Length: 314
Ligand code: GLN
Image (cartoon, rainbow, N blue to C red; front, side, top):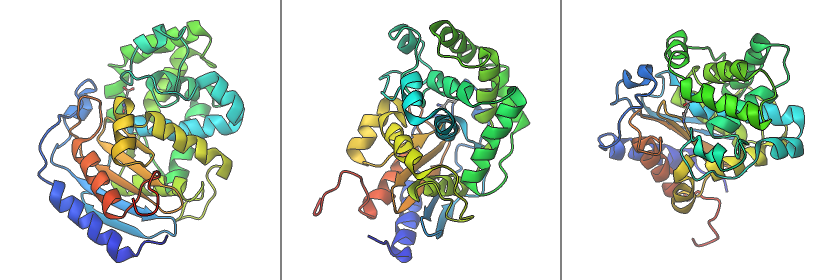
């Protein structure tokens, strides 16, 4: 099914208009920088697998990628160690607990269950083959840039804010080390993971990144192959399982598209073979997902009849 661009544009503009004043949620505050971002910012972007771009609202504002970075590091690490080995080491099941849960580790012998929670994300970061922190960081930044189709850079301000408050993640990194699930120095993995969360992207970048997944690993704007086609289904499956944390099941039930959120207020949903829908709005619900972002992405997906579990007529 090819969607007509005018129909996509109508859906995006309506979703922006209808959700612009949607109340609820609060900016993340455990990372001090995130509390300072204007909560009224709101943008929606769609990018199709043939490179068409539709935007509404604040789609040029640069915000912190945060947990959405986990998806790209997952792809990078998986391609280096192999899908089976990656699965065995990092897992693929939802934890059913918040993204930074220590209890999830306690219940599973200090092993991660999913690359999309903080524990598994730091394990994934540590699996990227590298000669040291800077080499590891360069590779991660390069894959974010390749997915976005432009040079992505670190925000020193976001990074400083996170590095000076990330004690909980450091504790998780040491627990993983004790469990045998850290493949580099644990504090190096935590440092690089914190940096990978502190890069700046726009809602449009996010839609390009998602569209690269929708297109089977080829960036629809640059035409560059970023990850192997065989890697993408694993990434999308994991986004379905854990992309919105404890709300992932609700998201699958109501929207039915692989998604990923970040505490910076970003959210993407991927319709494989078709397009990606991205939104940015800082106020979050208690699970850590953007309130307006979820409403807007769901509205666009529904208006376009997208959803992995839809059968003809549904
Ligand atoms: N950097 C954040 C953290 O480690 C990312 C969390 C998120 O976006 N859910 O807590």
